[in-house]
Image (cartoon, rainbow, N blue to C red; front, side, top):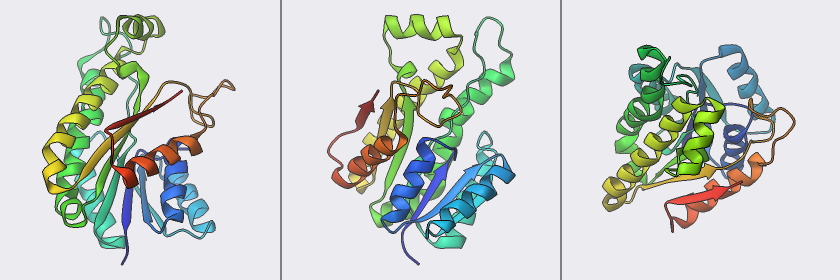
Length: 228
């Protein structure tokens, strides 16, 4: 068994490009998302490109399902060397009307389940001096202009998710650096081409994001990269 990468929150944009890029570098790829049919199609597409790939339907808002995913990934391809957290929730757009459950789900995906994935992969990550790579977005920056845009666009939950995920990433990076585990993120300040958000106005090529992730993983010289 070789190197294994687990991509949590697989879709048609960034995570697809990351899976292909790392797969071409010799990683076996495990992909996870809720929609079983789309996941199966993605698995076959990756395999059709000559990559070792397997998909496991997972509700990433539930930490116990996330932990089970890591167990399945390890059983399928071996120890986890790279964990890519690409999952997010865009609910709770208006804090003044959002129900408690939608707000809780935003936080669970951004922090609780993310941390659960790291915990479950931790022994493997330490043994391989592996990496945790995080996809994040510019709405997470703490800046008055950004805050105004978040409120204007009705994406308050997403803004909270991104900020919480950024802090979680930084704390994990500080905690794990002594163990040789790299933790870093790519901050995306535009719409990714081919993603669910792209309505024909996408400006960010997912292949460029994948290149940034590879640079972070291999060079390990900074915590964060950004692209617009």
